[in-house]
Length: 301
Image 1 (cartoon, rainbow, N blue to C red):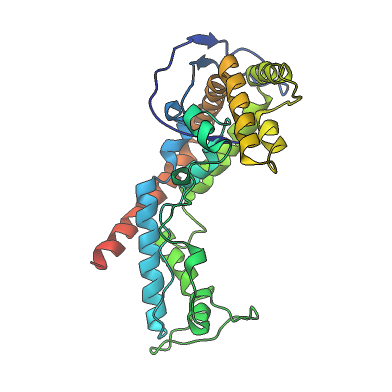
Image 2 (image 1 turned 180 degrees about the horizontal axis):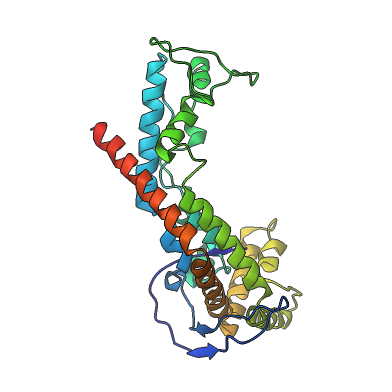
């Protein structure tokens, strides 16, 4: 599942301070946690989120990549029509949306397990699917022909078409030759590690069992929250909404989200402490990338 949301709420502080001396199966102690009642995704602030690319920076990054793609294509006699990606979820958002299951009662009543349009990037003004290039433009931007063979082109000054075409060249320039923003790559890995540890945590397992028992009282045999959603994946929307409401009801009765968020956050903080040097280096690269982004945007004005 690995999903969440983020923001403010009237939380009834359950103030459960659970011991950090419990031993996991691997002999490693479980970190102490402070559990609060969670009734809104706006209450969730993942510790690792502060190391990820922000929505505003991501929008600026895509704009800079688009500028570089267009400049590159122009050198090869092509006017690029490739759209700028906007309103796309960041790495942190895409990895954490609904991390613990559905949380917001209002959204569940309307959308069931589906994300609201504004929360999944589906209301994006443009996207890859909107691109309808000519054959020549596609070759210049993608770097290969329809059969997949590399295109051998030279600009007026004799420069060869970059490997992967001008589309990939735009990301290389902005990302500094990397395969992507290094902070997001590391954060994605650590979010996965934290999730694996959360899944194995005795406190998370205990509240999951309580949620499961609540669902069983209504005639359903589910071990995890995502089992409920999966069971109605091919059903009509009314059935999906009904199941989502019941799922959320049991989650609220057991404070499933509050416990899982507390456990997950504790493991994330432990990972942050353990990978401090790597995170610092990744953030340095991130700031260097954003400096390039702003130079590119300023130069295009």
